[in-house]
Length: 142
Image 1 (cartoon, rainbow, N blue to C red):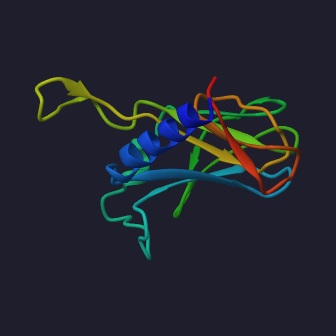
Image 2: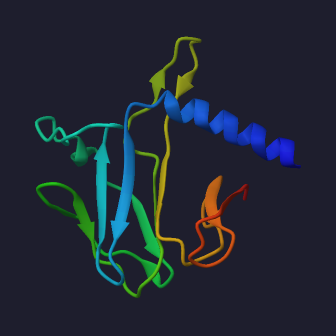
């Protein structure tokens, strides 16, 4: 089982390194969720192309339910979220499917999580804390 999880993690890291964009979410205690879309190691977000506008239908939720409507700010999107604690995001509609080099169609799905208070997974292949608010994580294959 351990070698299976390591294989999955290695495969995930290879596929993640091939992607040029990333989505992450932030949340302060019980405040709104901030959604940021950018490039790895990018010093400043590229607002010239308005790439954040590609994130139009994310599924954002927390321990108390779904987030409210998205609002577009100058640096990130925000969404009100009831309660406090962890927040999750998933979005598979950022990019239209494209034809890959092998001739088949490819797509990408983004998943993100903010905080470590909930030691349970809500998404497939999620990094989950071993206990509430711990820094040790495990990969959960749901």
